[in-house]
Image 1 (spheres, one colour):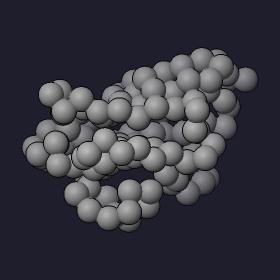
Image 2 (cartoon, helix red, strand yellow; image 1 turned 135 degrees about the vertical axis):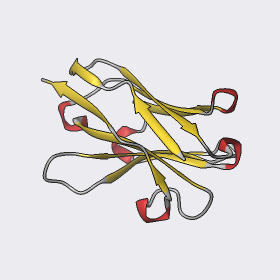
Image 3 (cartoon, helix red, strand yellow; image 1 turned 30 degrees about the horizontal axis):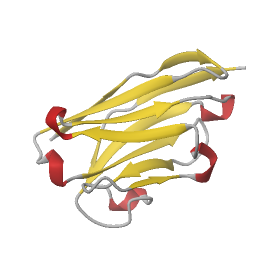
Length: 121
């Protein structure tokens, strides 16, 4: 099982990035997928999730700016990040689960390696 995240980078405040996470070794269509992030010195926090049925969930601070989507034909989940702010700076991780509360990291069984997002002011 492998989750490969990519798409991070350095961007100015107000800019955009599209993060991607490719899944292999699992039946992607039945996976619930999530994005989490961790800033230096802070705990990992939920960002967004999408169920296998396409239901989406967001943390309040990213609603209206971030969009999670999935392409089952490509075994890929995306996180479109717009209107980025310096406080969005973190390592972003994708994760997969077939169970549980999608906003809580303890329910996720598989994790990608993370991709760094840095937003300059």
